[in-house]
Length: 159
Ligand SMILES: CC(C)(COP(=O)(O)OP(=O)(O)OC[C@H]1O[C@@H](n2cnc3c(N)ncnc32)[C@H](O)[C@@H]1OP(=O)(O)O)[C@@H](O)C(=O)NCCC(=O)NCCS
Image (tube, rainbow, N blue to C red; front, side, top):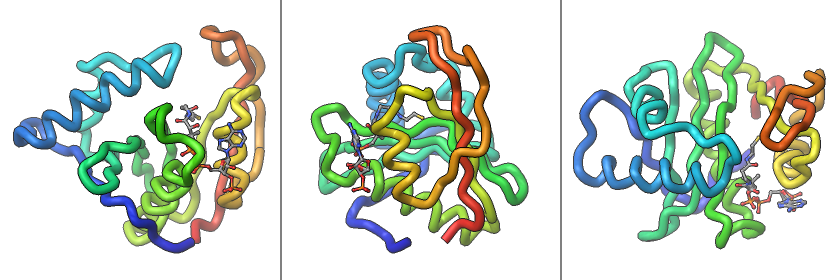
């Protein structure tokens, strides 16, 4: 895994400066565009305030490109969310963002990463498979909007 050309900004703490508050507003709007069941602004604020949550916004120059949220849980971290602006997909940004975060997580002691993904989400599955994640389980009827099974994918070791 090698690092990318994106610059990543972590949103953390109870009070954000003006630039990070603007990034968080963008993230909340983007989440509503990217997911059928978006998290509310209050949920995202709670994530940002949680020291176990790694909430990052990726930028290319001045353009916000995507975001992700990883939970730091001992040696096995969980990818909660990752998305790229729909207008900027298919250009390698999702891959670059996830690689950057996994490199950083490994430096912090993460040895494995797990995630849940809808069984029909082939774009996300391609991203994960390309980085070496493997399907390790399935939760039938896990999602309701739209209805779908969840697949559990795991990467171990990271790197
Ligand atoms: C999943 C997502 C983050 C991928 O971001 P992206 O910037 O478009 O992905 P990339 O351009 O970096 O592509 C990564 C890999 O996935 C593949 N891929 C991307 N979009 C694809 C698609 N629609 N169909 C099939 N493969 C696709 C690419 O070919 C690439 O494979 P490679 O590494 O072997 O070349 C993006 O589609 C997204 O935001 N989806 C909505 C939110 C979502 O579903 N998040 C995941 C929840 S588990």
